[in-house]
Length: 560
Image (cartoon, rainbow, N blue to C red; front, top):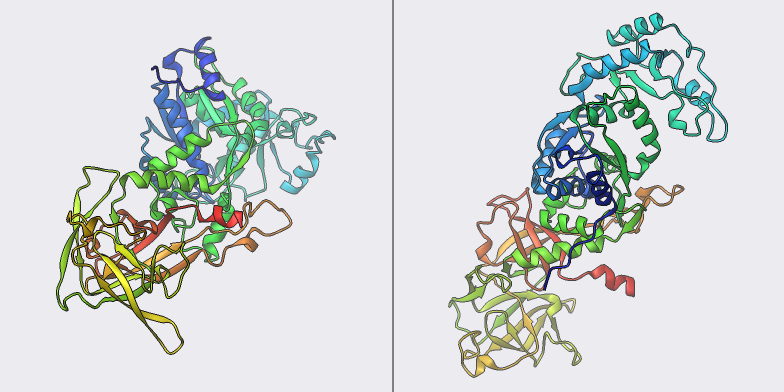
């Protein structure tokens, strides 16, 4: 049976139409253009997967271009983090480009526009210029400097470039149409003075181009065929095209801007400004805190590149914005980790079990399967002894028929081990159970083939041997915000919705096979969830992060 062909999204339809028209396959080139003023987040991941995915689909090159036009906010640290994130997601770029590579060319083109009477130096404050812009229904008022002479504009622009003016004294504006219904066309600013060192050009420049002036021209210089932006740039397309109209040569490909909708994720924020606030106010430990929606945060938490790519593929590309439930991202994490994560036993809330009829001092090594989803994953040995830890929630003194875990007089199977029966329990002075005394059936060992080993009991528990257990710091993460759309209400500060219980640090007890784990290793703690080794982990003190539970617990809370 022929495999069903996946339908094209609207961006791919645009490309197909271009290919059936004047474009050739060799004309196609895409780009991912982050500004290096913060760490990439899950929203950027969708854009990365779109652009690089198109590159793979059409066998076309994709540039990684840093839109580094604001030295006040951009840092080398962010450049390196962005490159690391793109590579981690599994993509390779053709050319590593920077808007700053084009500063000289952009300057020459700006001078050309001044000479053509299409740009002028304005000497008003930003507040006055904003007032003159008008409203969408009221035309703007021309600047008194709009008709400055070309020689005067050239001289002032040169002096701006030489650093002879303070910031905010002069700007260069395009002379377009102060009555345009598109507010962005009302003589937009092209250059402003900034006296700060740039991460690449240092102090070579004192004037820096605005994004709208840089964007299309960078695309043109790199011969990008399709410049894909999020929907908020739709009003900018007219300006993108106007700037290109002034300089495009007929013998070169003209880029086209097209827009797609953002996919917002529930229970989080993706505004760099808001993420920075979380970092600066100590709500999280940094940009890579595992609760953050940054790619580096997701990586540290234990998400796989495959899970994020599959998530981006599932939500797809659309023309209308909507909120995607974070549980879909968690689903893809579970689905991928289920295939690749070795199974191990860990007890996070320990209750001591003593097997009274098991010989004191004896240790038995039991065979345990590493991953039932992967036949090549092999097995390992885990130690079994008289004293074990199980989870507190796995024992009750009294319970109804639907409780299939351990209860007085009841039996359960210990994973990879024996069937045990709870005979009695010990309580402390407050009445809390601190120990359970059990007996075991020596002939019921898993996999032994005996009649007793084949006996059916309804509950199977994970456990660790007390004397062999590795005490480990375990960080249990929950959603960073309690509200589905924390920044959805303009009258309420998004910080009001920070989940105070988003991190719970406990001591867990792990089977000894995990003694030599490496940072980034991922595991399934059986019956609990998926965990990975945190970057804070050392051989002397292991630290694990909870990536995601085995089931969507939030869905259950919603139902209640």
